[in-house]
Image: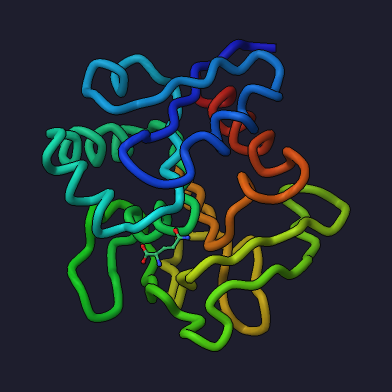
Length: 194
Ligand code: GLN
């Protein structure tokens, strides 16, 4: 199996949890990414959950916003979890977009205060044949997808996982749940791209 270097954007959010999941995979070298030099060396990148406005501000301050968009547009595999998914979206309901690379319309804090945070289970055939634990924390959902976006999972009527070519988005946090199925799926995306 090909060895790949997978970065975790390490400005804010659930960085350590993603790094731990990646460490458990074979032939994957996890790398914390905070600088342009580190970004240049990875084969794929995870944008963790956290606070999207804070991560976006830091991306700007670290001079990473435009280079990261360019790298994704050039085909680098990227996976956004929760706040990371918000960063990827081309359209955010009621506010300006950030990296603006993925053809999805996302609503932040979509579950509102009533179901602020919750855990549910679903089978997502692309990831695994058994049900996965899905952890939602002040989560967004996807309201609309473009033609070239494949919906991977809906909970009730709302889209919570999608893929467009080299881009993967999940509204939930596999780094906080049991198992490694989604990290393994992303590592395969990265392997197929090198
Ligand atoms: N509510 C956060 C935001 O809008 C996302 C929450 C998360 O990443 N768990 O950025």
